Image (tube, rainbow, N blue to C red; front, side):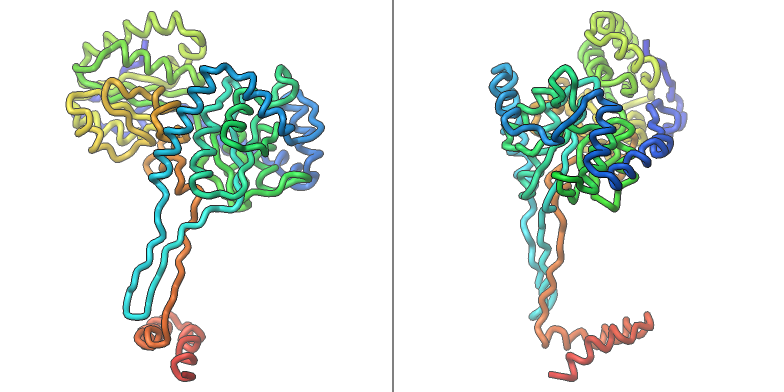
Length: 430
């Protein structure tokens, strides 16, 4: 069922050989630019017009009535509520451990530099609502922002005609559980522009986070600098590095689970065991045929997914590092030791009982992760995403005098005489 790429015998493992859906964000920019310009120029009226055009909803107020969240929570399936509460608790424990402490370093007598970690003041969190509703994404965005100490948190999610022009009730319920009552029934590029520029009744934010479609990614790229962003999220992806100790049916289940997100999802199995690859193909036949979203799954597995055959696990590590997956499962002997050698991945799932689905919901880790190979240089959403490090410099006169000549030398080398004078006037005048 999966395309096979044979890299045995020393063939190069460059990422260009490996399949991955490509988002043409540059092409989307041409469509998104006039939308964002309209929001900047005409504010809430433009947001309403764009919402009517793209979502089929005529908005009055952009903000969801506060009571709607409480009502959604009251109507939530008790089992779903319990699961969300457990997810929140686990995520909070993990993210609280990420919060760095301020650090003061005495670089010399009377000379200190303190690194202060200060949260951004206001954030806009985007929660998708296209093919699937993601209350879990509310948890993944809100919890680290709250742990970081962000003062003002707003959520935007697309309105749905079938829910009376409000976002999905599960999303509203998750917001209510987390104590977030500033929620807007706005999706797509117009939501990013609304947060970036601010419109009537919606103060601008300092940072926009959260995944979305190509138009959300394009709006983030366009407005970066006007507002901070976390990343330009693309289609979801999984890589699985497995040897002959792996269970083929487990692997097939995980490939199908990832593929059901989106027909652009990319699924890569890297193995040194051709018999395992054969067994996974057989297991996929049954699992794909019986999947709830079979057409979506089949297209994702056919279009940008593959089995990569390698000589050994070491070679497999080279392949997965080159691909830099959003999600990486290690299902080998000594999986923990193998996982410790991985350099590039958004999140790593170790052994047969840590599937990606666990990380999507209840592991405690964050599921807002870098896609498209950007895990080579970017990490997932965390408390640090909402913090800024600020250096606080505190020197006595004596400490300044001690380095004055060094500043004179460096300032002279750069021909910045006023820099030198700003120090020397203090040395001479006291």
